[in-house]
Image (cartoon, rainbow, N blue to C red; front, side):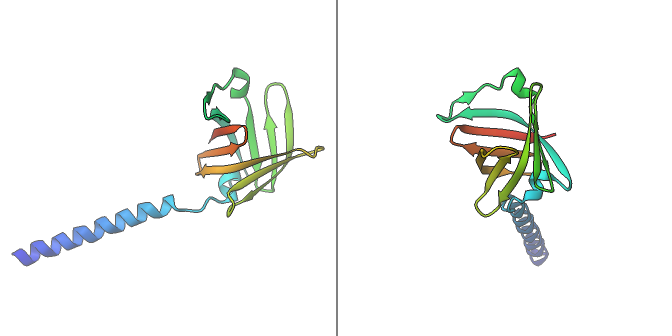
Length: 135
């Protein structure tokens, strides 16, 4: 009888270890460019921001209407109620950096991708951090 109980113990222990290992693998998944753009495009909206000092920066009503759409072909479009901008984007998965190059301008926006999942992205720049959610 004890042999059967010990066998059940090892079976449950093995299942538990496999479950823990499987759950850990998803967290270590390297973020990819397709997580930003989806198969064809993906739209993101800011949900929270902090300034360079790390203090919470309240998102204004106008900022709540702003969205950025990343396309799988490497282009992007930023839209708000008052203006639009577009350009090209590149993501370096090893360096975890996102660069936005605006059309008709030498200006670029450089971000460190702090975290990235299919639904959430946290970007850091010298001016602070921005949390975005996919729509």
